[in-house]
Image (spheres, one colour):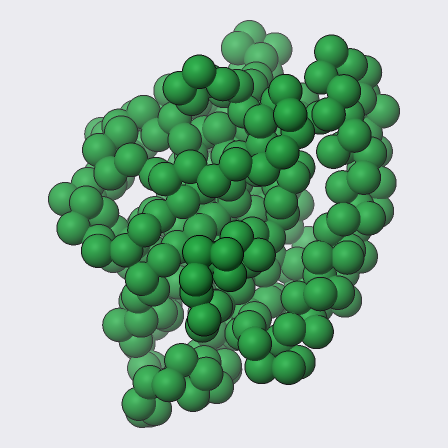
Length: 285
């Protein structure tokens, strides 16, 4: 699962349809919000991510400039990764722990600028690995996991299907959060980020080259999709949802777009996975 912060609600619609169809992988890798939301799929909590989007993302406790100014994190980490999953909308640790597959998060080592793939602990109520994978430059402080500090995995490997191939996966479903044909351009905050991380030249290089690497990655992915090597689900539209979108109506529309695309491609996905095809579930997503 690709990241994209609020745009990743699209992927949540896709995974909720996968849950309806009882499709569960034996290996899962996500980057940034892709892993943060992805664990609710693996814990089989259909609708949980939509509830978070509708009920909490517009809550002042969730994110905003006040948190960035006070705690140097745009997202209120203790609330988002603490109070919500452990008190307000309980994460099912038991089901997540029972998942038989391997779960990895892509992170970027702040010193080397290289992608690392860390297995996600099943009983970490602080979700440190998930926070590290989500740690966008400027909006987050670097996150320490073990002996090293990390930033958002998307800086070094935006869509880690290559690592899935290295892990031996022969059937790969990639869920994107941008439309097919999207071309990444240099970000407006790029110069600020490069000045902010001047002590970490490899991160600066990541920031500088990310658009070029992302676009090359997408081109390769589309070629692999065309050849039948990889199956891709992407939105036709993101409904104008930006990285830090908090409007429940817009987020719900994008979630429904995920449901729509997953249902439209379900027969093809099952054929690709060599699963029995059946009438697509009609229950509300």
